[in-house]
Image 1 (cartoon, rainbow, N blue to C red):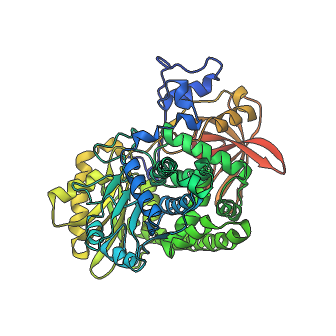
Image 2 (cartoon, helix red, strand yellow; image 1 turned 45 degrees about the horizontal axis):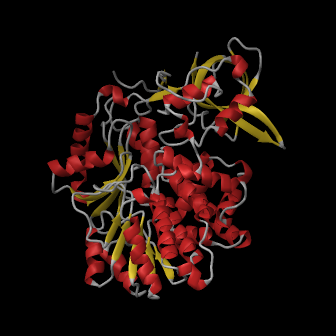
Image 3 (cartoon, rainbow, N blue to C red; image 1 turned 180 degrees about the vertical axis):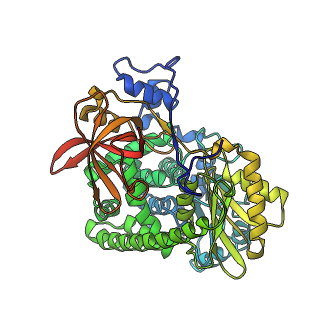
Length: 583
């Protein structure tokens, strides 16, 4: 079977209803049947898995190495030494840096600073070049956050310079580990932490919990006459980094995100987060996980993609809304610039794909490159093309000299880092370095190797996927009966989250009459629809759907979310349409 398509490169998804069994599911009897089925479809079996209090978090003792890392950090603090945090240039890295500085300062220690590599000059992680830059600050301890597990040369350079390194990371390790004094990473063999899905900022949070406990044991706070900080105050940062890094929202991550969102909604969060929500025209009192992922996250990421993520970190560190607002506006401007660059690159991809191959003959593993592509935007580009063509995509941009940097995105069924490892095993001379997760990875190779790598990557993808894997599916939670299409149902679902990666927001499908339609914002369809078998007219909106559907049928099958729409203080039900096809 091959993917249905509108053109030679756009795969049209099929709606597929989830198969749900309530056998063995022990959820409260008073829970609405719809929610019981939704949770069961996401693997929830007991009410304990829905507990969102901090007491339900995985215990600190399970994070192997956190206690040893805390002891080393505490030693430096008691000796009056300098701590230097080395971060990454995405939101996870930015929130990890901000969290580290804010928490350590709240513990009564100020000699801590951060360093984030400019992606265009130094690349990713703790490289020997970053170590040389770090030496100018005379640190007594380097602490990596959201990076370092693949920084073998960088850690060796630091060791040679007499600077010990603590690596805190969540990325998958390679064959060898760096020679750091402590490694805290739940994905390293021997770590007892049961959630490998935790984000880098989550690992950082656990290490800081251990540091507070270690300092308390040493009498640090008593000697200084200060109260140990309530670490829950930093969960807004943990929630933001977790959602923006698109890690699976397993039970532990859902607790962290839920608690962080609750603090944001109450206004008890970093002024920088409030300023970024304001710049994105989001009401902090109604914020959901999706707002962190699609409104706040991209604005912080834009700094790292186009310029320097230090601007984003400065926004998160700002002590007042007045100080944060100008920085948030700068980030908003960078995000607009990023969108323009991305749109231009997508237009170039449209032309490339249109003339590349006949229908149905695109590579299964797609590699794309243009000399003028922006290195900071290729990750977003790869993600967009992956969604459009429903196949693994690697977008490349020119780096220094004869080097190319690639950003890879995958589809369900293909672990992209493992696929790159398979290419490296078959062709040892092709890949210089790579790393990442199941769904996203980064890599570097020489320009002259691109054609050979593209062939090798396509071959590995063909070995690991079947033709039906290239057919995108929209998993639906089924049909909502007309009498349940109401505001109360939407409120119950909204309160049942947080929803996100691997714990998706409930999506339903059904047939509707389209009673009225108009185009808003040039790209979006604003509709009034009526469910078959019902008599109520409902508002609906299909974002960015005009290009795909320049004309609408009178009856359509919709895949949609139930949304609580707020306008001038009044709430109403709105359907957010993800997919539309003639009924």
